[in-house]
Length: 287
Picture 1 (cartoon, rainbow, N blue to C red):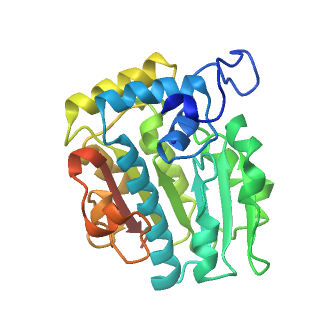
Picture 2 (tube, rainbow, N blue to C red):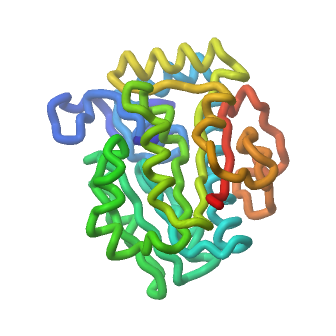
C-alpha cells in the first residue's frame, strides 16, 4: 500500500483492466514507483500520476524525500540505537536501497520482515529476500487492517523475536488507511505487540502546507478507487501516543537527521520547501 514523459516509461498502451494485477486501473504502489523514477508502472498509473503532477508539482520531491527519510531513520536506529530487528509494513514495490540493505549495511546480522497484501508487491517480493548471509529477510502477505495476521504469521515469527526490540516502519502507509479502518487502533495493536526498547518510524502526507494541492490530489486517488485520508500535524502526532519522540520530534522529513549519506542532493542541502514535501515524519521510542 505504498506510492514513480509519461509514454516513455514501461508499457505503450492500455493494459487489460481485469488482469490479476489490475494494470488497467491506477495503483498507489505503482504511482509511487513512478514518482521515485522507477519502471514498474503502467499507462493507467502514469496517467493518474500526470494529473497529480499538475496539481502538486512537488510530488516527486515528496516521494524521494520520504524515501530518504526512511533510509536515514533505519541507518540511525541500526548505528546509533543498536536495533537489529525491523518490521516494514506497507512495503511497496522494491526500490534500492531497500530497508534490509540499509540496515544490513550497518549491521549485517540484521533481520527484516516486510509485510504487504498487494499482489503487485508480492510479484516483486523476491527482490526483498536477498539478505546478507549473516542476517535474514522474509515477506508476509498480510493486510495491515488485520494486525494480528501480520504479527502471528509464521514468516514473521521465524525471523523476528518480538520479545526483543523491533523497529516498526510505517512510512507513507497510513494516508492509505481511511478512518473507518481505525488507523489509530491498528498502530496501537502493532506497537503493543513490540517489546520495550522498540521504535516506531512513521511518515504521513499532510494538508498543513498546501491544502488545496494535497486535497485535490486525494480526489484523484479516490477517483481511481484508492482509499485514504491525509491528516494534520495533530492527527499524525496521535499515532505516537505513549511513545517518546526522538529528537527533533515530528518534523518535515527533509529536516530529520540530514547526513552526508542522503543520496538526493536537494534533500541533503535543504533545497526543498515544506509545501513541496507536505509530509510529517518522526521516530519514537517505546519505553
